Length: 139
Image (cartoon, rainbow, N blue to C red; front, side, top):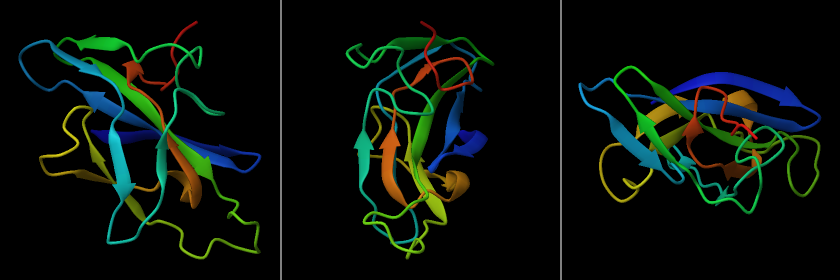
């Protein structure tokens, strides 16, 4: 697991989480990765099918099953806002990093720590895993 492209536009910030199969066999992923603030900070992270930056092509769609052959990559978008809620002059506690678990592995295992994409400080959303490297499901 790693952090790919990050970006920002009109108060929306986020990044693409990449899941690469480094094993010798095909594996399958489906659902939402677990994301939480690292370092003892707290932040509300909501599972949503899509958002401004990425996710499923239609909000009513179910999370797809993504088969990953050795060397293939799947992705999911984590996004939020760099505008604090309620609106104030600045983010009081910008999260420095996030802990990340594979979908279906939320209750066990050691998380992968990634840098916080583009300074997300409010309304954090995680979208389901999709095929490819963009975090956006094709229409």
